[in-house]
Length: 264
Image (cartoon, rainbow, N blue to C red):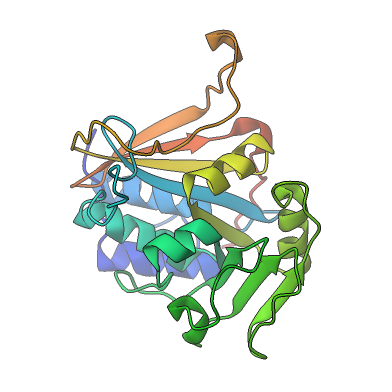
């Protein structure tokens, strides 16, 4: 497993692929650069249907935070840069309200070149205060998905959906498709990602493993229990050395979107 090389030229090519002005099938690249093009090109390339992908960063023992909730330094520097590249490739980034309240994420692109994606918070009961930083920052669209009549600022969009315990991931996906989003990053937390995964909506799942052992604390993904390993998901998986973290790129084959053929 070689370390991927995200050079300036590689990233400019990826952004050009996203904008539809270039392709992945030509150029003189090193093997490390080709690995980077393969990894990010799969998300940047145009597809016939909107693509939903998720990212989770965790420790070697599958934890995403300590018992006290400290998750600040789980991912290393290269893992964080990878997350920001994913944001740059997305039209919209989705988080649950618990993540919004606990982590106060900015959901901006700061460690990679690219545009800030729209910020979407799933907030069934309207718990997110209107002075939350990710709502006040006007550098991108802000959308709150809720099941109540909690008032929002005039420049914050509201999607009102019914709920049955949790707002249906299928209803959320349909609403986002209706807004024209083609690339949607489901960033967290683990419960939100698991809901999209179990609903069969994710096309790709990135699991970034950082070399540390926490020993206790919340797990990255917790889905409905299965009685036997024969029923476990076994996605096609590619492994990449990011530097500080190791990435498992999981292709959920049953939902793999069809890429639009290269016209260049």
